[in-house]
Length: 287
Length: 341
Image (cartoon, rainbow over the protein chains, first blue to last red):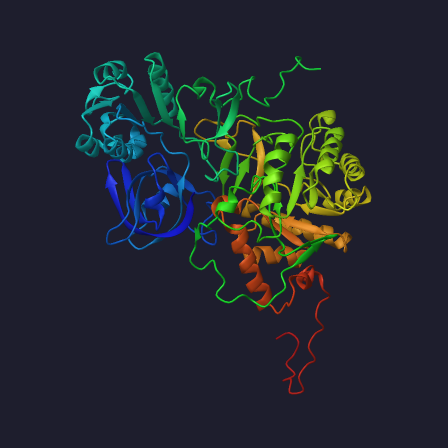
């Protein structure tokens, strides 16, 4: 269950092209699980014209310490709202709602887990790796981005994972290409039981497809644009196949953001597939 | 269930001495602050952030007869002090709504205003009949701002005759003790004309305003930002339009219950609607910014109305319409300055 709290900025530090925001969030670290996200208000509405909260997957939590409970969020300075956030300074107050969304499902027994992150989609993966390792799981990591500056979490991944592979599209670090280029070999080498992925939709679609071909589960964290983050606005929907085989437009904020890769209709994201529950009737087919 | 909200300053330091109850026709409410249809789903999600039984009522997302997938994404674009949305009334259909959502709201003890939407006058009537069989709600809000299948997809609310046809159908099909509210669109030449037509057709009250039609073009892709091309604009950006609509409708209908909505952020904004003539207010888009906004706004409104000297929030309804105060008598020791000073 999420809480709405006022947090104080502890630090904003640069990490490549991104910023890591550490903010106090009383009560949140104890509740947060890997894959959960937090939303932040962009100022108050007396001074800000940006009415929508911004959502960030939780990168890490510290339950205690000199600041009490804090959470770490990774912010890409990509618009007026995130620009305002990265300009916050120690002591500034933020309105936080967290933890939100369904977390990654974790294997009950020790398993071999492959974590794939694209860009700053790697933000929740270190948090996830900690939990997987605590359960005795093997953890391998593949991180990719268009260029070195857009990679995130390489050092942290090296600290915790059995192996770390890096790819960049321009070859500025690691192998040249995409994270999916060597995914099949990585799955074979590590005898992977489950793939966890977070990154752009195109990457998730490719990872989910390769995992399905290999006969293993994938857990994908989707990034859909959201207005509320708490399940009321119906903005962040995508077509997902349910246990009953029926496709529904599910909210990524409350029914996700983690979905089984084989359940999301990746090719149809951004559309209403005609066989979706309640889809508009096709012209001419109905009386 | 424990309340999750830990918002400093959201709890009133001292409860102001003011009666916050209001009436919507036969329905008494302990607070004039309601949720807005489409911004609170069916209350369950927001109940994590504030006690939904503490506000006036939950106005549920418009329900239609059958399950609906809604429109393709993107469904939303942020705009200055607002947002544009084109959801397409995604919902589970009335039967699932009654079994899951209405049943939960009833068990939770919330007051409920059910919003209904239809593509035809008949669908509105059928929805009213089905709801009548089940009961468990306090009022119906009729969302006539949806496309009329029989009229090239023009929204019912843009014409007096189509609005009146829906309202009279719903009124006929609803328990006479349950008030029905027509939710009006601001996208009309004269909202008072539509308001009068709805009341003549049997509306017990009016809700205004729905979103106003807008459009955003993404300058990167150079295409419309929404999959639905156009969308409804909501949020503080439209508040002055909404206040104007309440004012104009109150002028022609001095006694009809009005629910005001459109960009309310805080207690002062809610107070503005009440002064313009609203008996109650719905808080919508701001809940996306602050999920505990309805409860916060209730507290802020109570403090502000009390500070302005009102013993009951109902006394503030339409207060801005009062006759101008008489000019104060000129003082005896008037300096007698010439008029042009």
